[in-house]
Every structure is written in structure tokens, then in C-alpha cells.
Amino acid sequence: MAFLRSSSIPDVSIALRGRGVWLRAPVMADYVAWAELRAVSRDHLTPWEPLWQRDELSRSAFRRRVRYYQREAREDMGYAFLIFSEAEDELIGGLTMSNVRRGVTQSAVLGYWMGKPFAGRGYMTEAVRAVVNFGFETLHLHRLEAATMPHNIASIRVLEHNGFRREGFARGLLRINGAWEDHVLHALLCDEVPRDVGLEAQLE
Image 1 (cartoon, rainbow, N blue to C red):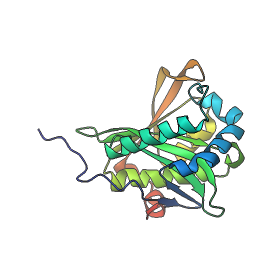
Image 2 (cartoon, helix red, strand yellow):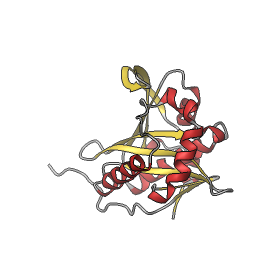
Image 3 (tube, rainbow, N blue to C red):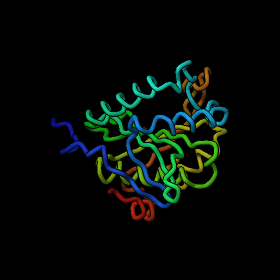
């Protein structure tokens, strides 16, 4: 049986555009802006993320991160994006489409973070909207998945606004901030995309 795979790996230098935001893969030139945003957002982010390493914000750690993302994209295993506001052209967050599975699955997992100064403005909803279009229209995936901690209401709303449906509850799914945390599981299929999601997100 032939396993399904995209006929060609997409150009990872492309930008994705949504309403009020644009996204592209991280490069080393992003280090200073990325480190500053992550530092000022640390208290805001750590309750929702794996335990930060001692060198989390160092240039060498960022370089390893960028190289990992580049390798993942070349091998069609994952795609990482930084999110920028359209009006100010300012870094505001990040988003990953990881664990890309081909064969009979054709799926990937979304993860995302928003800098504290920009939270609650609807930017992440639009960024996810753009990546949903990329996943289905460019990567030809069938299914996108995401997991959120039950009390992360803002993250759940981002998914719901993009048509994701709750599918289940996973006990102790991920080690977050040093503790194994339960997560609510969500998913979106390619034929369930809300009409405005597919229309608004554009590739450049």
C-alpha cells in the first residue's frame, strides 16, 4: 500500500497572512526581539509551558531552536512560525505545527504562545486561522489537533473560534511547568473549516 505524502515540501520562507497578523519561520535575526518578548512575558507564559531551561533565552538556545525548526520543515515533520502584528510589524508571539504524520493519518498538532503585551486582542485567533489554511490547503493535511489545559479558557476560545471541536480528555498528558497536567483534546477536519477561515488566510 502506498503511503500518502505531499508531492512537494512547501517553501518554508513563505509568509502567511491573516487579518491583522502575518507569520513566517524564525531566523537568527529574530533573536533579540524574541528574547525580549519572552522575557517580559515569562510570568504570563510559564503556567502553560514546559519548565524553562536555565539557558532558555540565550542566543545559543535560540540558534538550536531555529536549526531544529529548519530541519523539521525540510523533513516535512513540523513547521514553526513567529507571529507579527500587521500594523506595527512587531513580533507578538509564536505558533508551531508539529508531529506532522503522513501515511493514512495526514495530521499535525498545533501549539502556540502570545506575548503578554498582546494577549486578549484576538491576534492568536487570526494566526491560528492562517495556519489552519496552510495545513489544509498547502500541506494537504486531513486533521489538525490541539490540546489545552481545562482552565486555559483563552486558548480554548481560540480553537473554538476556528471551528475546532472538543473530542476528549487526556489525564496527565503533558509535563507543564514541572507537573503532569490533564488536557482537553480538540480537533478540526479539513471538511469542517468554517467558511471565513479558508477565505481570510492567504499565502505569499
